Every structure is written in C-alpha cells, then in structure tokens.
Length: 415
Ligand code: AMP
Ligand code: MG
Image (cartoon, rainbow, N blue to C red):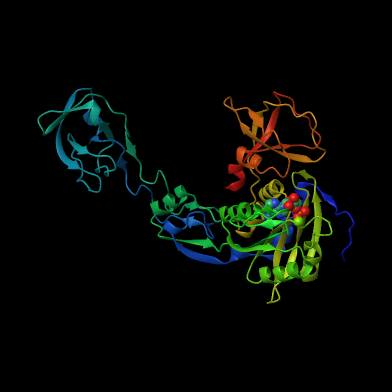
C-alpha cells in the first residue's frame, strides 16, 4: 500500500469540488439542530429561516422630536395651532382633532389623523398651549411607517446565515428569544512531527515549537467548530493509527498537519489507508501543494472525514483558508460562497511567477495599493501576520508595478 508514486496534480477548483462532494456524501452535522437563546447565538449558523410574525415598526411613529399635525392645518409658514396633547415614546395618543397639533417625541406612535411631523427646530412653543409652525410640511414628513423595516410574514434571516451581532439584533427586533442553530461541527486536530515541542517546554536541539496547533485551533474555532485538540503525535505508524482511531470517535472531521508528503517519515498516508481510505493530492497552488483527503472508520460503523494539511506553517494556514473553510461551511449548511476579492493595484514587481497559482501575502499601503511581504517562503509565518490577505495570482503571470491584481482579504476567508 505504501507506494511512492507521485500523487495526481489537481487545480484548486478540482480539489475543492472533490472535497465538497466527499463531504456531502459523508457528514451532515447541519441536520442536527440546537435551540439556543438569541443572546447566545453569536457566530452560530441558522438551521431554519427566521420569519417575522409582526410588522416592524409595529406602528407609524415619529423619527423626530417635534409636533404631529395635519398638513392641511398649516397652509402657510407661521401658522399657529393649539397643542392638544403630549405623546412620549411608549405612549399612545388620542386621535388628533383637526386644527390641533400634538407635542411628540422620537419613537412615539403617530396619533390617528396626523399626516406629518414638524421637527421642533422649525417650531416655536408660544405660551405652553400653542405652537407656531415655521414651515409648511410635506405629507408624511418625519414619519417612520409601520412595517417599513420588516413586514409581517417576511423571512428576516435565511437558514445557513452565520449570525452576526446585527443579525441577533434583527431577530430580537421581531421578538425572537430563541433560535434554531446547526450543531457545531466536531473536529479532532493533531499535529505530527518528532521535531515538535509545545510552547512552555524547553526547545531541545533539532526541535521547533508547534505553531500549527495554535493557528489551526484558532481557525477552527473562528469557523464555528468544537475542537478536540489531540496534541502532537510521534512520527510512527502505530502511534499515528492509534491517534486516528481516537480522533474518529465522535467527530465529524479529523484535521492533521504535517506528514502528508511522501517522505519516509510521513506516516499519515499509510495510517489513514489502514484505518479508512485516502486520496493524496498535489494541489497546484503555492504555498500548499500536498493535501490528503479521506475518511477514517468510527467504532459505530460510520466514518469521520479526514483532511491532512501540509506541515509548513504558511502552507497549512493558506490551505485551511482555501480548502478546509469551504468544507466547514458545507458541514454547517452554509451556502458555498467563494471569498469576495478586491481589484487593487500592485506597488511591487513580481517578475518570476510560479507555474502554480500563487497566494502571495500582501497588504495595502497608505495609498491603498498592495505591497508584498519580502519573504514569501511557506515556512515564514511572520508573512501571514504582517499581511492583510493574499493576492490570488494565476499560474505564470508576472506582475509589474501598477498592474491590477486580485486581492482576497483574510477577513473574507475568516468570516
Ligand atoms: P512535513 O509536512 O511533516 O514534512 O513538515 C513540513 C515542514 O513543516 C517541516 O519543516 C516541519 O518541521 C514543519 N512543521 C510540521 N508541522 C509543524 C507544526 N505543527 N508547527 C510548525 N511547523 C511544523
Ligand atoms: Mg513531518
């Protein structure tokens, strides 16, 4: 089984299609829903459409402090009307008699009969009981109409939406106290590599600190997952198989970093083949390249998805954003949304492009043009922190200063 044949080279789009097809065939956490308090639902993904059972606002109301009146009663600027009532927010006034005005405050329901509001800055209170109106109002002025925000029966939030703070506010505005959300995908994570040491431990000769664990736990949590962090697994076949068995139980997805090349110390391929099934791909992107995809048998007869990321810190970061994020969206029932890219000007030259599609770490300068991090090596994690996103550069395309390039902000990829 441990053939060292070169894995097939796939384009990113082909790899994504295969990942999404494999995910669709296997794991469906989005079919399990949980009912959570609206206040606790930030970042969760809606399992059902949220429909409003009411109009918002529920009544016509004023958007200004001022006077509610009938336009017909103000034929000319300077007309004087008796003030017949006072309506504060939360109160309901009486019907407005013709020829009178109502003192009214922002948010208060418009009294029946009124057809405009004049803001107080354009009025003069005369003797406490009358008002001079110094403008001729247009019909409907400063009135917020019933239902102008939300109509009764309307879907205000669609299933598959990741709940932002403002989405929680919108749900609350239609009186929804609890929301049906998708169960978080359960992801088991481990790193491979005998050279890896955890921060807090001394760095013995030949060792490096395990950075991927931190990056990947953060990425998974940001994507809405429940993470079981299984730590570092030694570069041995039996240990790797054992870790896979443990990781498969109770998880939708097993994610690993490192050990997926075809080197002698790369045990993930034979281990996954022994515990399930595996495809190893070379994705024609830089950084990135090796990616393993498959499934590992679970004790109950099911299978957990398996994705093996490359070990180089920038490669694992970028391949996560490009390949794992769409899988996690699918697992949560979110629509597949390719990240929105910006067209920006290059403030640099890139005369020797790779023949693979490159994702160059870049950020905007003060003019809004893109500058490139000097060292684009897949081991230089500083680039991923310095940068604001990646330039998606087609295979073999040289970039000259002033060219327009496709820039994908990390914010797009982390949302
Ligand atoms: P591998 O894919 O296992 O051949 O690893 C490729 C490179 O990434 C090697 O230089 C590893 O030392 C490095 N690497 C692998 N895993 C990690 C990790 N968890 N944190 C930091 N670097 C890693
Ligand atoms: Mg390794």
